[in-house]
Amino acid sequence: MKTMNFAVPAMMGLMLGSWTASPAFAQPADVRQGGMAAPTPGVAARRERLPPGTYMSGALLPDTSLLLPPPPLPGSPEQASDQAVFRQSRAYKDTPRWRLAQNDALLSTPALLADFSCALGFAIDPARAPALVSLLEHAGADMGPEIDRTKNLWQRHRPHIGNDEPICVARHGSLDQSPAYPSGHTTLEFGTSLILAELVPDRAAELVRRGRTLSESRIVCGVHWLSDVQAGFLEASSLVAALHGSAAFRTDMDKARAELATLQRPSPKAPDAAMCQLEADAASHSPLFREQPAGP
Image (spheres, one colour):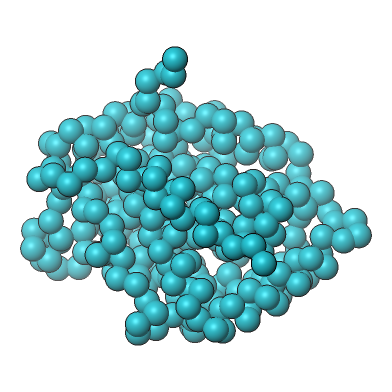
């Protein structure tokens, strides 16, 4: 049976390339500021609709605060790079990529399944995929508390705080109070792509690519810094790896894999062609690399 072991080191190489160990990075919030910030509204609101987590507890739950580097400090070169990406990405406003970012902000299970339909090559009706829905919802419920705990440790402000630059979702108090680092949407959405890629290995590249563009939508939207999303990639990889330590998770993976194989035949519903084209274009024009010099 194929696994997604190849994805983790590959993504770690991408993410760690822009991070260095230096005084330019922050200290935990319990040292710098004290107190705890409210959980991110998108992730918290989704978890309220989910069943209790069942896969990870105790020793199986990794401490991602030990794994992730600190976010950049204000005034550091690394923070200046984040700010440059934020400013440049405001040019996406009212473009098709902006509208895709608005679509990608939704975290309900039906929305997530729809987001991956082009990458899968067929549309999934959640009512016909109870094993997959249960797997993703229980995994999301397990990941949520660790996402919140890591965010609360650093209490980093989001890029739209203190300015009137456009963002792709409505500004509101709970969003402003929600810590930025790491991106919870990225952890959940990229984590979902890793799970799906293991379930449908012949579409692994397409699924992980869609996980990347879903995550990049947080940069396009203006609600996360580049380094927030990079940290979300690493957090997602570590949490999905930890999920595999649960026998219950592995059993549910087998059930979902068999269910998806059945749904793929004989003539599954085709995904929306226009959305597939929009996603493909987004994958070819990544905000992660807009600041990089052109190749030779």
